[in-house]
Amino acid sequence: MELRVLRYFLTIVDTGSVTKAAEEVRVAQPSLSRQLRGLEASLGMTLFDRGGKQLILTAAGRRFLPLARDLVARADAAEAAVGALASGRAMRITVAAPPTTITDVIAPFLSTWGPEDPLVTVQAESPARAYQALGRGADVAISTAPPRRRFAGLPVARLPLWAYVRADHAWADRDDVTIGELAAAPLIVLTPAHITRRVLDHAVQDADASYDIVLECDTPHVAQAMAASGHGIAVVSDDPRFDLHPLLILDGAGEPLQIHLHAAWDPSHYALRSIETFATGLSRFCVEQYGPQVTARG
Image 1 (cartoon, helix red, strand yellow):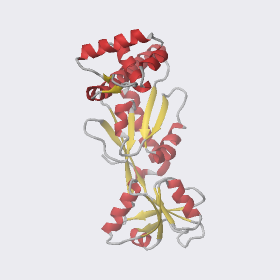
Image 2 (cartoon, helix red, strand yellow):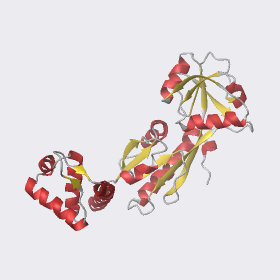
Image 3 (cartoon, rainbow, N blue to C red):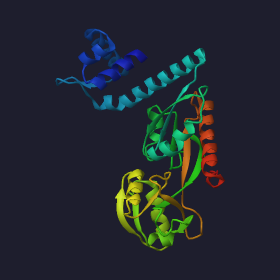
Image 4 (tube, one colour):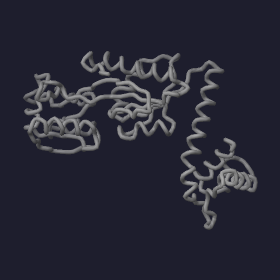
């Protein structure tokens, strides 16, 4: 089973046609068809249903597709690594992380790097899907959920939740607010899909309280914008915008509400040292940016 033929197979899947795939890979269509049949013969399975005008994967083909993508991705990664070592140029690292983490943590961290550091590509993923991205080509994933045991990793930081108020709000001269006080105020919150909302809900429940939701938002930026327009207090974890004043939210024990950032990667990754350098550097940057209280535990 040759990598070249696997690449042909993936191109056929992506284009939906042997004719279009032949044009893309610049191989004659009869030759491409023969090599596809040869791949099926070597695997002992039929990959496509050829009954219609368009090639459709069989059940066996659907099961084989992720394996083929993984093999080709690993081969590409190995080729890139060898090329980087041979030429002496900086390696490229792909980081998967939630959008807010990219905006407020990763992008500011990368701005401190120099030309001798690896090139970094960042892709936005939800916290629930960030670790899945490691199987789709990402080298390191950052998430608010602890990584699975099969991954290597480290805790990055404990970032606080903030209650954002306008400069003319009665709390604007304060540094913090208790969960009981906050629950009695009109709140602009994120949807339950966000870890920030789930942490808030747990804290309110632990305080045996309930709160009044003025508006649910899909994005933290909109939540802050609505707070700036005077509709309520925004509860988010991202950095302040629109001249809003941040308040730490204290639970019943007087501890600030926090979300935990974790980094994870494949322990057998060829660029292990570069990935570890990125993760530990990101953790140090969070402490420098937000203070020693965000130092990760564990």
